[in-house]
Image 1: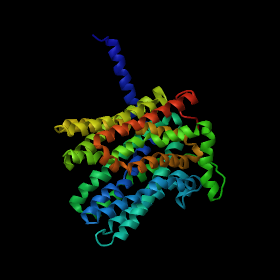
Image 2: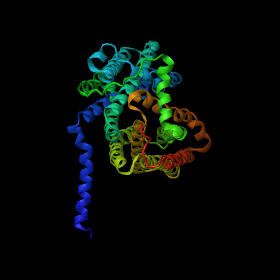
Image 3: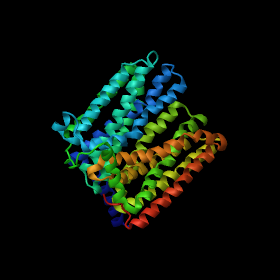
Image 4: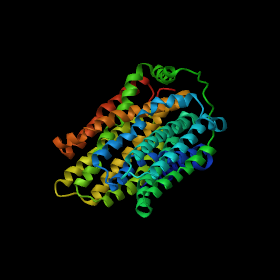
Length: 439
């Protein structure tokens, strides 16, 4: 029988962790602000990508054209090119009133809303060029919003607060994704696509209110420079601070999400191949998956301060990669007599929990790597470095599955995590304590 004192102590510790996560939402306006700003970040991407593809199919746009239009999200991978200018210069008009970070946030949100309205008043069935133009503008505006909000988050809170800030930002982002995904689809069925996109533009309001109420961090005194100096300065600073660890740290960032990017491309095709309906997939991946992801987010925010950054990264990459073995099992089980619905739900739960945990750990690590004066630039560079290799490799996933089948494909994506785990150990050993190199 358990010792009552020990049981009480465990209960108190769990309650303390919960309070440490929830209390700042009511006592720290930075946390409230990052929740609202994260919600605004979660809206644009799907509306220029997955959700919009449903509209394009309905408008009978050829599938080849729809595939090409997915490249309109390229701004999210190239945002590091203009991020340095956002670190150095104030937004026109708004910068004088709100400060550099918040001025750019509100300016970006205005542009996102205008681009959404532009897409809303288009008609892809009869004038696709209009939709393409405003979708491209939406991608650029959404990527810019990401840059300036991430820069604000990193600058406004100290490193030890970044795990908490990242967790609440991720929660807001996932709610925004839910609104732009399932919410927009429901609205389109009920009221049409124009009303759905206009409602999404209105949903940016909480993010704008959050920006207006958020504290403005002091602007870094960066000297004016030409184009080359503006772009090169944050890269030079990051490489100088990392020193001999630059190559392994950047390789770690580039490879950390690679297994997830490669596997996620073929997850839904696997589910469809196994015979699950769109309703099954939406219920499990969106609704059930949302709550599972919150659990992974909470665990990451609690564990990082306790065991350190690099140890958390190691756990994150091992867990996220190993979770693909659940997908491999689902593929094998489905091919040998059929997989039960609960097997499908458990598989998605394992993968979603591990993915959410790993995401928070990586976001926190990259936030700590970014220097305050170059926060937007360096974080944008790191996120682009994180996304690009996996995205490129994901393009080959269909060819691999044609040769190996789903089961061995997901086993392979799990094995991609092995060299990433070794990089974690290498960086931790060479750096000393299991923490990120100081900014």
